[in-house]
Image (cartoon, rainbow, N blue to C red; front, side, top):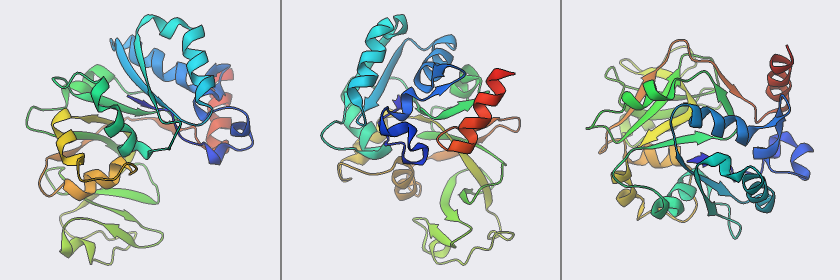
Length: 248
């Protein structure tokens, strides 16, 4: 599933007239970059959610004959559902016998998707691709790379189902003993058996909040890729960087 419904507020004024998914890098819309990367990795069936300028995205897919694969649209015109709510709404569109690759539309990376798919073991409910890059917001894992929480080192905010961690004062250079902090890539693998745990959630919620609320009773793990190169082109400065790289 490609999350393409966002408002793209960080990219204004570009997104005042088009959806973030159709903002171009190197003369090609972000959505095309992601679809073609996944297609090259062997994916033949995708779900794309739409909200902001939804008609433009649907028209773009039609004009490209859905890139010759099975692309299904999950319509969120009535209400933007965030990543968790968007996935929950799209649940009927998936084969529930297979893990689901989740990918933000504004992420460009060097990920080997076949390799990443192989990292998702049968006993794991979700696998989050992470790296050691510096950021303000980190996911926190134990020594076995099981998700324990999240923190914003700038504000000191902590989210975790574990009271001892939730009540911790986390300093930027000193995470609690036994915990390891990594940056999330916006790419993850999701087991459909988790859909049942979404029943108690509202229509709209972020997928990371969902993971953080269930990681004490589900196996949500991190997968480190040391040579991971991720460019979040949902910001003007990184969009400019991406265009510069594509013009070289």
